[in-house]
Image (cartoon, rainbow, N blue to C red):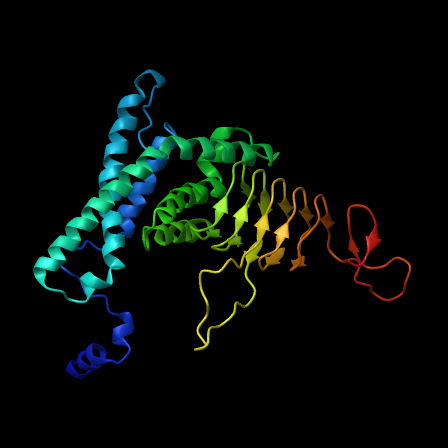
Length: 316
């Protein structure tokens, strides 16, 4: 046992796996982030989440209490993210310098937390359009309440829209934890850096992947298994991947992508495009175009790969 502990403690891989804790630097907490999401759901969807005895004429009190609690928890987790990614603190500077830096981070965390809290009315407004899109897009849905309570797309979008606000404000790590929590819960993987418009929905949802530099317009609908991904991206002179470049698709307004379609690269899926199931798309489309799965030719004895567009038959 002693030898095993020694080997694990001195393993050369430890430098890549070890995070040194510094006094005054909280660690990110999945449990606390889960509480933040629960509070946001209770604020945005009062009566569906949190306390059930909510009445319209007394709504201000529970919302106010939840906002205060959410702000406090959010500030702590933002601080954890800032500390986690801060090389100066982790490198072991002198205590006085660390103290000044930590104070700056605390102030930054407080400012960011308030900015996010102030965006809650906007997030509520956008999520309301997502609920409407899910309801209008599914004839099996009986009510908005069913959408809010049961549909995985609303759960994942609640996490994503909060995470995206934090991502835009430059908070490290925490946005990704939030979206990965939703990924684990729903099977839908949305990177917090993706930009998604209003009236967005995902039917069923399992297996959907939306990459970091995706831009999605309004009134877009995806089905299960859709991948909005990247091709192999370029390497620098040292053979390392070049990160931060736009590499995922742009979907304009009113696009529908059916199940198990794969859309790759920095291409534009134009307004009103419909992409059928099991299609591999690597080139931009024209407005209103229909890209539909290959089928057997009726005029030949062999199988021909024919893609059917909205206006004719032919190879694309």
